[in-house]
Image 1 (cartoon, rainbow, N blue to C red):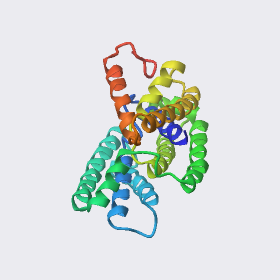
Image 2 (cartoon, one colour; image 1 turned 90 degrees about the horizontal axis):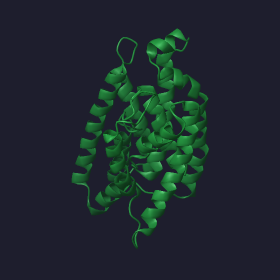
Image 3 (tube, rainbow, N blue to C red; image 1 turned 90 degrees about the vertical axis):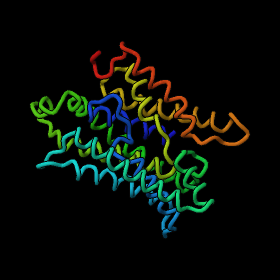
Image 4 (cartoon, one colour; image 1 turned 120 degrees about the vertical axis):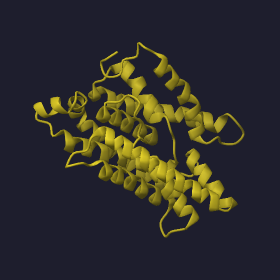
Length: 267
């Protein structure tokens, strides 16, 4: 539930910051960076765990994307998105190299981590996310009214006394932080941060004061349902990322085909 809440809330935050309804928590290369960190620690064992390595490189990917996109003290959103895509491609290529040189046991570990799942989470990981994820979500909710203003555009935000550049940095860091924590313990679980904010927006509208809490609730419920399906559909446990992808792809097709769906108050 905590992981679903983190992914959904960060997805709603990213969509508000970038003013783009098709943005997900992985847009800045955080998932690719985390995958690289996990694969690196699997191929070349390090003193710390796979989870720590994945978390660190997820944050590094976002820092690199932001540094690449920064021009004359400002960070254009389009440039930031492109930097995220470039870094994501680079990290994916490096992960492919690791898969090529890995032995059978290492390759199996990397593949299962990339598919995502909750089967490797123990009490130590649970206590970590129990403390950090709720804190991150609460912080994002405290900025919800400023996120409403930011969604109107930089000029409107400045006219209302909001430092849009600093606010973007704060929101991106918090959202990436809870996303990286989730990925570090559960692997790559896609679509939650894209689907759930849309579903919540259809219920309560674009006001982030209501959108973020509802996204958190629906994200937690959705991931529990997906995990239940993953554990019961066969005699073994299907990787959770496969289940969310199967459910997410048709939903995205629906969003793209529907002309009546309203995202940010527009048609």
